[in-house]
Length: 549
Image 1 (cartoon, rainbow, N blue to C red):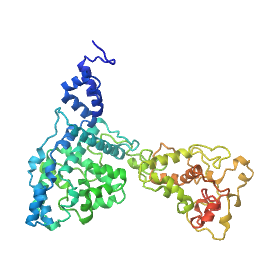
Image 2: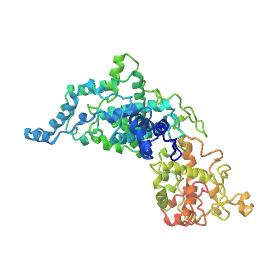
Image 3: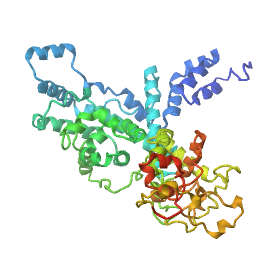
Image 4: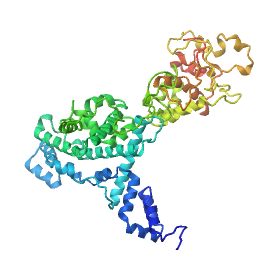
């Protein structure tokens, strides 16, 4: 037996197995070029090897994915040719007639043929280069969507999917089937130019019924359990829209149009934390129709209701979670906050989902600091990359880490800073609270931490035991750890008492020298918000020492 590069290259079965285990098509292409023997084996078994690599790329939902890329969706939204447009102009058809002509052409397709064309294929077949590229594109999108689904529905502690093999297959198959449905009945129609010229009265009921019959036929090819799985994914898509600003209102008024945008747009909405992608995809439908566009009312729900009724089966309940019919197990569904008895389950916040905290970094500065331009000018620049991205979670983790780091080197303005594991709660030097008006008598403009009454314990303590007020905390934070889960109020409370401390250290790294004296009213000082001289003269990144201003 001959050996090349340590491989028994005459063993065709071994080479065949190596090629079938290639994780991607690019890896397969590289492997084929290793030697003539590898190329010959691939040439002998192109279908089985290609199918195996496609399975490695897409997963067990490959038949559903292949249908998405091979189904002849184009007749559904075929645009008129230049010859058709010339004929329309000669006849003098107006915009409404042109739009109705396109919709009628789409509605004329036979529902049965639409439902059964290009069925999900389970046998090996050769893939074209274009099909491989499309499979890769869809596989990446569906993987991202599964990660989101896992984080919000199964395991809040992991950014990547923890779905089992069976759960992943069920989820992905349902997603590909939704993609197929949305491509068949798209809401993105030539930038909506065909629909914006049509009033509701211009749409004949018979045309709307034909489209509805097509949708029902397309969904009716799946069994009842598979339709329930699709309903669970649709419920999840709805919940994602509800997580972004303005999403709840739009979900209540235009849910069907949002669902018609498809799973790909849901991924964009999640990542962008806005509805921009949905508005770009189906903007006119969202902006111009007070209720639902008649062609999209009951986009999924009406067909599903017809099917449940015909089959005489119970439909999924509206209050059923998105995990129903897909997941066998949900981790932490009954968990409570690590610091209070608030129930939160999957909505609790931890390292994996801190990036979803709905807050601007400036809102996490304590007291009046967020209204003080002297403090916020550079702070906003430093924290700008964190808002609206997953980097917010990394920043929050950095704040936890900073406050768990222990004492700073001797001589530092942060010397003696107390670790989170052993914090020093504030002695009764002030009353906690962030509201009030300070006196405009100039006292606080010259006040310092040393100007107020100091407890005897601190007066007689040795110098090294007299840390500046930055080391005083509003409460005992022992037991708060970066790996724990928190309800939103508790997490915000922690950040309010620690973000300004993080900025005190970070600001110095950027060249800031803290004033030698602390303001009596610290971060609660009102004068700092409108008196730049006062804000710069005294340090306000500290707790108050004379109560509320």
